[in-house]
Image (cartoon, rainbow, N blue to C red; front, side, top):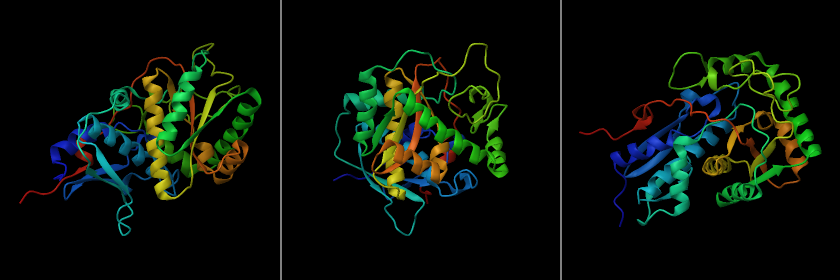
Length: 323
């Protein structure tokens, strides 16, 4: 019979969990040890009311952190049984993890865990090298392993149609002054443990760009460094769109991103067509898929970069108080 996780085990696993992506790098998660179980909670203080009024983004981010947590525990030989939304009266608690039967980690778990500190969002233009078929297959399998689907948008006409949806959604969002102000609050021009460093924000958008950019950095690009004319676009979707579906999609997103990192492929996220409900429905119809699109990624080969900063692990832990 398993006796539960310890505070030391939680702290070690949370060091990996906090490396998950989140909108504007807000890091909207907390991790609690309660009765020997590890719980993943949202942090309402880090919610983005203008950008994420429904809480979709915070649940995606916490789902991604949950996947990292699962990997860390599995690699330590103490994998978890996970229950999502375990307490109806506590909607901020998204997952409860209890020790499962101890076992050795699988080669896939080890490879994905090794990729955690190397994953970052690459918002710069990618090189023209195509992503091989076997890597594309691996990315699809990663989504399916977490009960989601991944649709690759391939071909000039399909990519152009997607770009129209994405640019339309971007224009809708940019008309909201509160939305723009909230984004700008999370751009960091000096070292900080959260937010998006201006140097990692990608170059300023230009009229010839096919896909919209957030404009975190606002840097001018070097001559000849336009974005790829036909990017590989991947749409991640889930069967439904409940809070549980969104947490599941967050886990699938992180598994796809870590699989890409392990394969030497870069990725950046493009959430504008997900944030605007009408654009999300347009996207779903254009794909002809059952379910709900949850995230869009641009995938390719890019220049080396570095992960954005993270807060100290102790800032996100809730541990039992010793008498």
